[in-house]
Length: 600
Image (cartoon, rainbow, N blue to C red):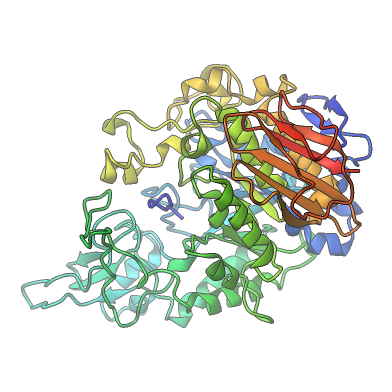
């Protein structure tokens, strides 16, 4: 969602061509492990349960035609890189035709490709080449709203009698007369600031928009809307996409009684203003209403019609699910016999936004014990939030902290989703002047909220002009860090963050305990180091320890009742400067250091 609340035993060798570190020895070739031709039907159906998914913001990944905007052919050109990194699927933010008010999340045609990104033939080629590289292509499905330039809305606003009128949420104003539009129907606010109601003088009613004025909300009480999106989903599934990420999915419905949202108050009982200067409200009347669940059960049923055709394997549904607690997250998987999302995003973990051991321990344990055995999708970063450095870094140990976050992402049970550039340590680089802002969020919220441009800057491929992103003028400036923070430089550095990511992903795919084993917390009283055990069905055990402090720490993983089968470990991966422990009762960790070991 465009979410403004912000809320192995490894032998290392250079891979020919790109020089990335691969895992050899007892671990099988990653490419062979991922090859659909070699996999059983069971593996094809369950590929997502330990998947590594990579989010790409198409505008910012690679430009091939010199217009300064990334395109589909640019993504296709880097599939080798993504395959070697270990990616199973890529999620593309919207590449459909759009006026680009919200850079693609205002869709004017759901069954075409925006010319800025290429053609439908380019998309078909991306899917076909992705298949050769064992990478599925997943699309963003925006069902809460359309662009105000979509043919449905143009019809809907043309007259009250139009057949599409009830495809959107229209309402009379309070106290409206023939000459006065009256007041807005209630106090609901847009997530992008100010009232969520916009007056339309042609038909003299207000329409509702949870997001921008140019993004009118669809009325999901209308069965025709349901059927329209089933056909849209079938259209893309027939083209071989691997599934969808459903944007803003919890906002499909609004309170039918049109009740006001509650005003939020501080500890003294006083209301306060949000970043847009509006009175702060909760959004319980317009978010996470129960009616969303039957809709997703319908969409899942459509997806489940597609199994082993076109691109073999289950088509996976991901939910953008910013929710208040783990109990609400658990509901997103659906009740028995009525499945919904395969992988609702567990934002409970990745968006804590502070390095607090006890909170991370609780949230990771919740994902293990309170999701009814379902597979969590762990995510720390996306296109709507400042990058990892801005939310977790201390300005001194940022790279070490990012390694630690990557360990939590890839060494915990479940699927993992990360954002382009995380693997090289790209930094949040917000505009310094309002006149340079592209994101309307920043234009509305400046200077308190500078918008999301800072986390959407072009991918940094090398130290050449514009970081190798474009030969033209990039749509957003390339950050000055590109001279040292780039793929080419980090490929040649054995201890780089890029190699750390590739080694973690290879372990996740190849080590039985890390691939599917349960999570068991260790050394739970420790408030400085987060440690856990991954125990595989074959009895194998792997320990993981992450130092959350800027000081060296020594931890005892044997004490505390974890039930380890041995007192020693063979090192699988450790932070630069880390040591191999003689015993698991004294694991030494450097500042923000990580240790991963196979229990012996």
